[in-house]
Amino acid sequence: MRKTMLMTAVATAALMASPALAERQGAEDGQVTLGVLVDMSGLYSAHGGPGVVAAVEMAVADFGGKVGDKPIVVKSADYQHKVDVSLATANRWLDDEGVDMIIESADSASAIGLFDLSKSKDFVAIGAGSASTMLTNDHCSPTGIHYVYDTWMLPAGTGSAIVNEGGDTWYFITADYAFGHSLEANTTKFVESAGGKVLGGVRAPLNTTDFSSYLLQAQASGAKVVGLANAGSDFVNSMKQAGEFGLVAGGQQLAGMLVFINDVKALGLQTAKGLTFTVSYYWDRDDESRAFADRFYEKVNQRPSMVQAGAYSATMHYLKAVEAVGSEDAKAVTDWMKANPVNDFFAKNGVIREDGRMVLDAYLVQAKSPEESNGDWDLMKVVRTIPGKEAFMPIEDSTCDLVK
Image (cartoon, rainbow, N blue to C red; front, side, top):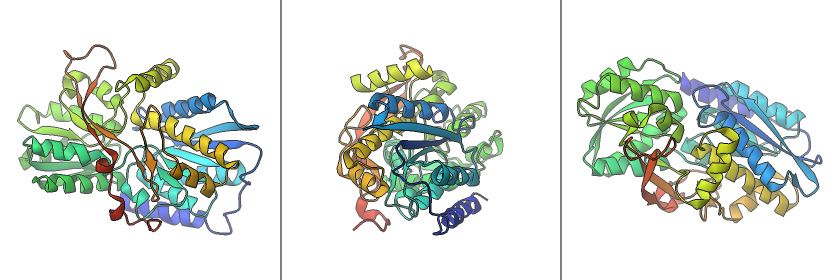
């Protein structure tokens, strides 16, 4: 079913980007218009949603609200976890409202549709919340940028670290769509390369509320590690129910393959303590990350997730590019973004490769115990910094046709 959704996204994007439909409001319309496409109230809203919109608005305000004499306008919409809604919204923005850049915190199927659409329409597509490595491989775009993380980076630290600590047999509970499939496949590579073995797995529909049957299968597998290749409330629900079914008490370890600070907060440290996972940003890492997090907290009343922090950084880098290039021409702006490194609270010497992959350091982190925590948002500790070149897929392995 989710495979059908992905195929539909690709086909719909191709149709909507056909020459007959590709004409839109000109990029040079007297303003710089940003579209923010997010999950406003669903399972990804806590780490994305209104917080991503707030982060983009913060970047615009910090930039001064204008590029030269052109005002910066921010539009936002809820894609409702529907590929057709995300593409219809994107096309309306592009054709009727002069949007120059769309940044998303959506699922991978919708992001793939946007990246494919950007090949024919003059806009920059930035993936902030989507994770599939297909965005910088078979579906890469000359004006597409995958900014925050992907399904190669997420298991790069976590999978190997857990195997090296003795967790050498795995069973997966996987979100049944492009993101989950890609995350499971890449985690399997890291587990096996470290000497581990995958005993099996089961796939659960997006937005599952009852994980009992999947957890019983994982329990019966006898695997030392149950890998949760899901995200958002799916991850939180599967973690909570795993505790109720006694998986950890029975000697199995839970591995979250995409975990956000909001998830740890929702679980509570008594449940999450010891959970090891990989992130591209943690608010309490250094003075710069804390300074941004304090400002974000004043606006949103929570610490930023890596998606929200990345959305700010990506927006600021985009606006600098528009200013430097002197226009909103998508290809020229993207080329500038690739040619100039990112140095801010989110990334140090971050580089956007020719395939559109933003390469930055990642961090292997561990959820603290209640006794270790000094406050409401003092939830994690950094175990190891993973250099960007180690954290992301090597460029020579990319199947992107832009790689020379």
